[in-house]
Image 1 (cartoon, rainbow, N blue to C red):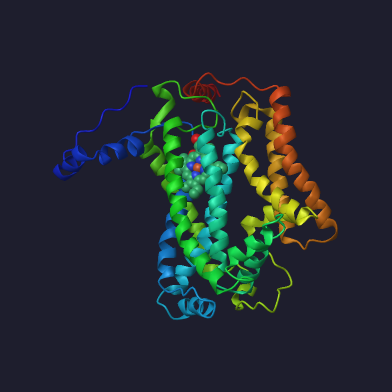
Image 2 (cartoon, rainbow, N blue to C red; image 1 turned 60 degrees about the horizontal axis):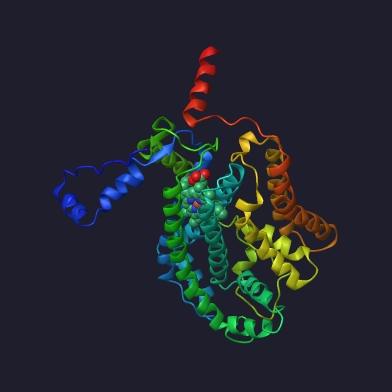
Length: 413
Ligand code: HEM
């Protein structure tokens, strides 16, 4: 396809800037006329939604930081003061807390969408890998943020997670002391966690920029998984997808507002409204919902080091997906067997989420072990085998051919 000519700007200020630094032409090319597959469904809304959630988190976080005091004696009180005495302080905090859940939900749907439609396959491998790196940084950022209010769950989550490094041979104990800045989670730990929690969202932001750069180089995949071949396969991004994204954003904001205004502590643990006490361990230490599947994998292995390694591998393995899945057909739509295994894997992920919230005893442990085994078998056994044995359905020749075929059928009916 031919590249789009730069627009002629009538506004003299825009013209002046653009001649010296063509930022308006770039935005016009990448956000307005950008050729986007014409058949994207609503599962393609979640990337931009995740981006908006990130921006809300950064803005609300900046305002929270104006009132937060990163000191072990004052952190908890400073958050309580914010909630009770600062004008709209409660609102800023509830926006920040609940948008984290929206962010993770969007990113999970975004990842699963990519898995179903084979968006990780060539030529989008690097785009996918950058995505997995973003996810790792998100996990780190959310963990650090959860420690800051210095409630009981904050303190004990920090203790459990940082102690995971102790079984590392030779350096484990030293590493934990280095991370804590002392002989346990203490004031120095809180201060470095605050500093890093402020920094990492900016790193995520930069990574998202690279992610979008890679996306605009390879262009979007689509539900059919066939490449764009002609102009008729695409639509300009604006107004078609700006409007579709705006509609999705409207729906997401309604749901988010419900939680912020009517059920703000739904995703929180009540014990985190008790100030951190190193002398009292809570009965159950349960992470936030978005970490639960990985927590279940961690606890499925009786050996602590083995559990830690497997937990990291469970995310790292996503990076290898472009090479583990050998099927020549991209979209799950034309892969009748893969489709089923995909949903079984999603069910397994949900099961692990549930198990992560259960106490680590009896049948829960056994179920966790089976669910973990299946989680990995999906990637290292099922996907490679499907690539060899699955009989796929015929793939349409182009996006526009498939779209008009649908119209023809409707007209005949
Ligand atoms: C801060 C988190 C993220 C943001 C803001 C973000 C943003 C976006 C946006 C705006 C798009 C284009 C619209 C769409 O396809 O939905 C996109 C595409 C994509 N993202 Fe992300 N993303 C994030 C995380 C991830 C993660 C964690 C992964 C994978 C592990 C990932 C993998 C992909 C892939 C493969 C595509 C191309 C999809 C296609 O064209 O079918 N992203 N991302």
